[in-house]
Length: 143
Image (cartoon, rainbow, N blue to C red; front, side, top):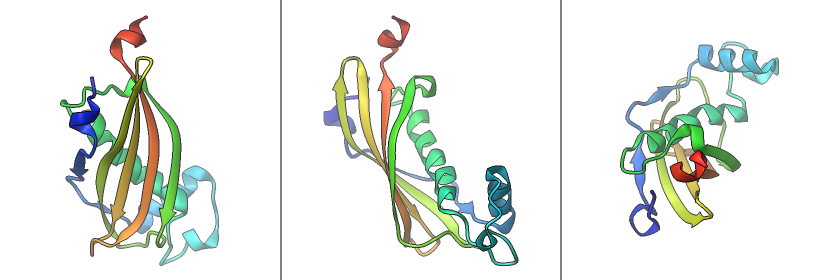
């Protein structure tokens, strides 16, 4: 079980960088059915929703952390907001810094505010994601 006194402020840095490539952008926009010309051609930018690819990868680090004892099957993605500085471009090498910013425990559930700082190869923030993830305790899920 999570403990606010131990886990608020927990910070994880991505292990592997993510290269934003033309192929990754095209794959993503095709999956969405988005044919916006900004996302096509020899030098496309990625649509804003591309940030979801990177934030979910960052959340996975929290889920995989044995100290936290989280289980994906007991997590609800309740809310998310983004603060943008610029769009992703082909050639960006992205890393993330994930922070468990706040944690409240109520009624057998952990309410986690998770902030993901998405950084480019120069460590400049491209976008910041703030999410509310709700994790149901194992004993509550079994009931």
